[in-house]
Image (cartoon, rainbow, N blue to C red; front, side, top):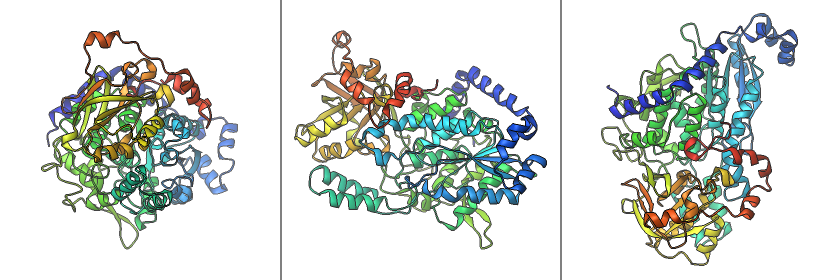
Length: 605
């Protein structure tokens, strides 16, 4: 199938834009590949320290027999439901390594926090920058430099981008990502949202709300909505960094452990195939494939920040114009909550990543000629894994959609475009995901109310001050202001207002991810207010027009009047409060040095 013209054009301009930085990255990768194996290269004391605690047979293999030694970087903790299953993965991996004459060591652990726990609290202001902390922890783990390959154990929001950014600093190593899968389905996401909206109106109390939340989030595995965590897994499949079809197999499923063993076998390669270095796998075409997959599945808007940073880690420069150009042409092939009523388990049952990747390949929307961690290339990722009676893995060819309310072929998509729009105007640049927003809400024009925090909006809602057509501006929520927390707790009150028939929208320099759902939200406004961006000029009562089809976000004022307005500085007491307590003091340099959201909010460039 001929590659779609827009996909080809976007890829070519990324290649041109990235020429010098990508060449420099590949030069470092090639230099690292030329070195002798670690056991020969390092001094005797270094080698002795590295393998002092290995069992005798393993020590003999790696030192005397020069067997490959695989580093495991794990995000295990039993605070996160998604990461709790990783507890026993290292033992399973080490046992499998021995069967193949290799060794494996836990190179290090990385921190992993749960946004669901920290939503609306000061701890949430550590969330975005935890990605860069994870990247640094990954680098520390691999810096012992005694590994022939790496396995990355992580699933959720910032964890996978952080692991990936860190792994790309060691681009010479073959690297396979190992997920743990989603929890089984509980209370549906739609029902959970209804209870949240009723709670926002005071119609149900804490007991009923906690019962609903506990029924939705009830066991080991990722949350079942298609937010950042599950978008991560879809993108890794598309990039060829998983064992094919691993993303959405539940913890405890018969095939799950065998897929983990297969990850070890994959990174080791075989007689006929060598797993390539991750820095070669993640090239410009691979990044474009990930962008296409995000758009085709209505994935998390957080990846407009994270994948910009991931690309930069590989010497590749992408921006929101690239996402926007692709979104105009890439069809929407799935509807999973918040873009539909299905959860990720229904998505998997309907065809999952294998179906989506096949349709995108066959439709010419993805580069087929890319390196992956498997000998069959990206086409191998169209298979769906199962365990045969003998325990061995087999992959079935993805069939037709098993449920066209969840996944559809490229020939009859839910929408001809990916549902992501870039907004430009005198308020800066921002993005909106309209795939879940009703068609009659794609254009909102109304006076605004300006809030300096999400708590202030909640207080106004509770006081019945927002019962009208309204655009809520929530500023001082960008990377430099307070670490750019998720603002999920704004969804219930805004949804209640919309449900009453009011035309409402949100404009913010903060993040909303997939939780914005049916309420139009212009998010990630750049430059942010704390950096002197246009949101710092907005006043209560200004009329704002959010026009998603036209791709505009405007304050409706004469240009001269708007330009003459003072830029309000961030209140000093707010800035100080944002930096105190819950460990936020330690992240001051990250806030100070953070690039804009469109530049990946990187604190390390």
